[in-house]
Length: 159
Image (cartoon, rainbow, N blue to C red):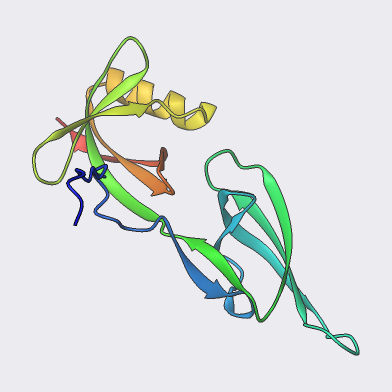
């Protein structure tokens, strides 16, 4: 045994993977897939027949769930694709700071202050107007592969 010290970097994610493998042939429309390193919602799947020697191919067309760009990928149907863990969480809106960050209340009563206002103009206007009117707003945050973004808004009544 050597006298060296072993140093391990601690990670806050408890070793959880951002994606999981799934066979390409089993991924369907409205599912999720990782294309070019981005989490995408599948909007179109087409499968080509096998050639004389070879695999059937799946052609995926997906929309990036964070920036709405269209991405495409072709994968042999027997191969595994990465599928992102996509979660949606509701938070109550407490405050909006001048620099565009939201202060949100989590389920367990803590605050979450690291989310920026959404880039979607209509959603941005709804959040700002509703907050200015003093409404009780609940924002839905979609998170996948270490990215988070507000994707929906609910009004739960006046304060």
